[in-house]
Length: 612
Ligand SMILES: NC(=O)C1=CN([C@@H]2O[C@H](COP(=O)(O)OP(=O)(O)OC[C@H]3O[C@@H](n4cnc5c(N)ncnc54)[C@H](OP(=O)(O)O)[C@@H]3O)[C@@H](O)[C@H]2O)C=CC1
Ligand SMILES: O=C1O[C@H](COP(=O)(O)O)[C@@H](O)[C@H](O)[C@H]1O
Image (cartoon, rainbow, N blue to C red; front, side, top):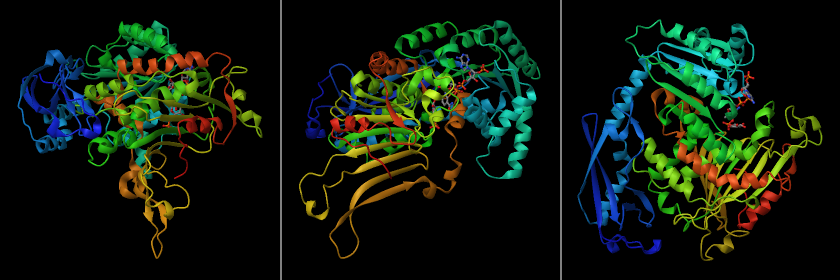
């Protein structure tokens, strides 16, 4: 193979590249043949596709993961897919760019779309038992049951299903049904039908009180599920979905009991786990090893509900389905990136969990890091789960390990109403140093992002509830308009507001209308509320994710190696920060958080962007 020319990105020019080609990859899935095209320029070792700026788009590599075969069980990819690769060289840059334009279209392989359709169809027909472990908790009540109800409301659950809540708390069936009814809301407001649907849904819900580490209790649970499944002839497949809405310290015993006493032999078993998965790299690896004796990677669905949020799902579309953004998406044009999560309430009854974990493990190591990976990764080869997750892992591996000094930590207190202070929450340890606020800065050591600070901020009990991404572009060179604005020219900014009130907008400078030459800041807006009539019907992230579990679709779930890299980035700093010298700075309930986070940003020449 010939050499890739290592040109500085600004000099990249298709005329200078010695060899451009296209891989035609043919593969067969369960006797059906498909092919796809992958453009490349050649390197000494592997074949790499390179963007116009010289950033690698993707590289051809063997897939190690698994896919669902068109019919039947999940099977390892090696067993179901045979690939042959032929090289069909072509040389003109026009052809290359044409081919790139079709990348996403080609990526949605018609064969695999068929397979997804069939999986969906099959999922509707197979009776399903859904078991929510930790059914007495906050997540189950606020998110899991409402999402299940909404799926039922929209006729997306299988024809025959049962939902079983399981937790240690003693609840009668009536108490349980009342508790879930209280939080079942209809996204679509059409009263009578909603009530009717609720009346149909609730009788399908059962409750069982049991311990997480007692085999007998799981055998009782199994019996309850068997009773339901016996209603269907043995020739019909029946499936089981276990949703673990409990803290990760009980995962091991729960999964081991499910493995021994809770599997169905008649269909799939899938286990959904909530973040955070462990507390650091060591506990994660230990958890992973012990779970491996009981369940396969195929059966695990590690949920990070931020991946199910509409705007987070839109990140890849924004970047890779538009021509506009990708050429600017690099260090030559972007000055900084900010990823911010704010909540205007405290831990409110969840201290038992939160005090053990803190805001870094609760929000940053998972939700915000996932968002950052989607923002920073290269274009995946296809939209298949494994290709997307491969790219996320590659990007995460380029992030420099964090140090304690990269962080500012805070903890809220309420001087007017001390009862609302974090330390007064029932369940918080006396003098706890657990942070409820953190700001930090990441450095990404790769060609695309070197030198661009990625700032992250997450906090509870702040001034508003908001999650957003802000991409600040470089300042405009030259002084052409310096007379026309009062201070310096503000940089362009792309804002992706994940919640509330989903929006994507660009802050630009514009001439103020009229007989003036004054420049003013203006916006190019995509407000979901006004752009799409049915935007009020945006499903909750959990609806999308639970549906994906039922369909066996994994692209919005976290793979084990992603998690390993994520913990590697955070673990050394978490260990350092747990030493007593790193006390969180107290900040006022309802405020902006510690001012020190502004100084941290200033160190990198950045100001946290606020407001709309
Ligand atoms: N709440 C939320 O909005 C979100 C939560 N999550 C994640 O979901 C998981 C559960 O969260 P959440 O529902 O808020 O937590 P909860 O504190 O409400 O715990 C859920 C249930 O687990 C049981 N439980 C709690 N602590 C322990 C313990 N130490 N040992 C054994 N059982 C325990 C309790 O049930 P019982 O005593 O009856 O057995 C409790 O009702 C966490 O991992 C969290 O990170 C993720 C996203 C959002
Ligand atoms: O995972 C978690 O997320 C919620 C915030 O979720 P959102 O969808 O309402 O933004 C957070 O409150 C909780 O602490 C955390 O565990």
